[in-house]
Image 1 (cartoon, rainbow, N blue to C red):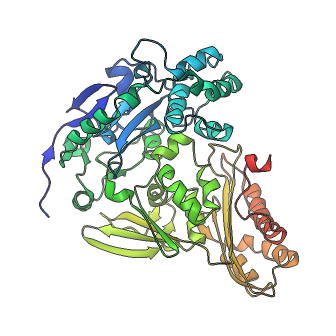
Image 2: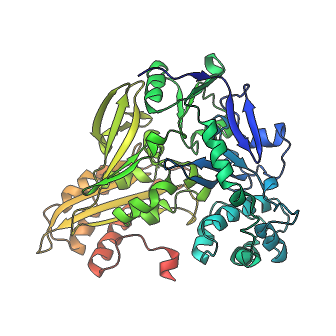
Image 3: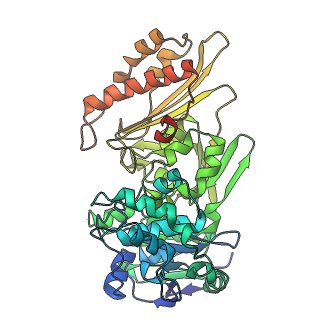
Length: 494
């Protein structure tokens, strides 16, 4: 395959303006550029880690099918280099063309949704994204859309009232993004010239590959480069730890990594599929994965973060690996033109070390559904329910014979060891035994053989050890009571 043309210019659209940049640092964030270079001060920096939502902007991108989708993202951890071929929309662009406030803005005014005002632009952008997708959302949809927005004035109730009232103001016929959609699709398609973007040199270089084959070639030639998909993790390396991530390869725009297919009992998702993109298919395939994914960050994080990235970075507290290990998921790894497939649990070797060769990357994840009759559940334990980092996460898959004997059991945890890890001693204590409370309580004592958890800011070692045992007991209780194996949300509980 011939090498693509190389372009030394980053191109995207900001509100209604074409942008072409030749001098861009690999670690330059969208928020810094908006505020310092474009003097667009509506987007604020609150946490600089994607938690508070004060920096929320919309990023419009073409879908593989040729449509255009707008999603709220955290500008504080979104790198400028990842925006080639996108449409960035800030709060300054929201107002309707006749000079009046947009319905989202007017509802916030009329229902007193703004107090100190610092967080208000972020709330407006999150509600704008929701309104475009669901004009008349339910309370649950509103709360989900606002998971990633923090109001320090505790003004949530008037904001919720404003969200419920937006559609009563009309406005779809004058909404700028809806009016301009066809023209914007044409403009974005014109930006897709099939070229590789290369800006800078040496350690100040970043690359936006032209396609998947080009990415494989670039990474094989520069195996020490930092690969950035959603930047929900790498963004914090820069904003919180001041790490040098150069050179960088940005892959968020590779359509080939966004494929989702179902064959038999297995879903195959490209490593670039975001949580938002994969949610519906995975939840239909394995219902317990739906509530898990909806508790990963806020909506902005789920719009950016990728399932492949959650696996590739090897974090011991990544939310998806324990569940996928319990499901016996597999990975396709690629280096150049060569591919190999391994079990996900074999990918994690030690803290910071994965079975990935220099220049190799995660290309796809293969997720089988539990067999008919098997029980499967995932439980995430955090200090607060929404948008919180995991203290401990347990995933369980169980097969029973007709007489209640355990014929298959897989248990995997995150937050309990240096990697996501199976509880082999506990599994062996249960296998071949009757599924009873006495058997489960006896097996709980085997956790000390599988895990020696640490104490950190999220939880103490003693707490984690106790939680791990109790999650097994909870799983047992749910399986014998006929309760749904998926985690019960607060909405279902209410």
